[in-house]
Image (cartoon, rainbow, N blue to C red; front, side):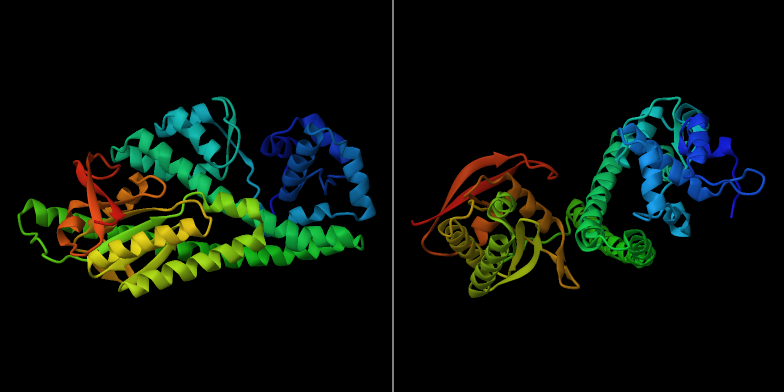
Length: 402
């Protein structure tokens, strides 16, 4: 285990050396032989600094630790070292000069990790140094800095939501019950921290596996769409007389409604809606491919029945007192792989659904041309410029009746 001096503790924790002296005086930090300290003391100093900044006297924390209400020794566990990073010896300005990464982009890196925006003379965290290489590599490949910023923020936001859920899980299942018991809290929390870290070690490869699986979907989609584009440029993409259709049904507002009605009502609504849309799609020869948050993706071998199914689903959702759904349908060639569908047809259908207003069903010209169903009226709404789709697309609204 590394030995650290008082000044190193202060530097790596980002606190004043006098604060370290104070923590030693009250017994929170206990120096070893030669007035040396261990890495866990960096994390203890940072925790106490945060508590002091919030107005909580560190002496009270020291007294609670002495009584066994919680154990500050938990911070000595090896797994904590990778989760509570120390400050490096480099400032943001120095790192920018060294790597040629704009300092503004380095600031975004810290914000994406959930911290306040730093200044040029603030020190970079050790874990932030591991984020810099891919940023630098993208810049060297000519990536637009705005694209890299978006990448950082999306990663940060997504991972932040994951850890928020972990924190809620820890409070509801572990920390809350232990504190509520009022018995031997320090020992129980120490034991929980040990097996909780063991679980975290299992979760990390599980997260990586799920991440790479999502990459497989997106990489496959990009490959398939690239092949389609090349075939079209070469004039080798034949037009299908009866193409399959992809349908996206979006129930925007459903999440808000379930939050208002509570968990039990949310579960009932989710189960009811799942049964309704699955039954309706099946009755019209469709296949429910997957749920996407508040939306659903369907595949139909024939666009016409897909249009009829969409009309029925939108009507049933409104009839159930739920926020009106909106639907987008596009017809064309798709690629099927391991239960999922890829290609430009899928992407365009999703974009059409996003363009539709609540209660509206929009379809492309390809759907109109390939649909031969009675009792349905297609009304042109003119060309639309859809996000992520090159060129304008002629869209039609759908309603029941001739």
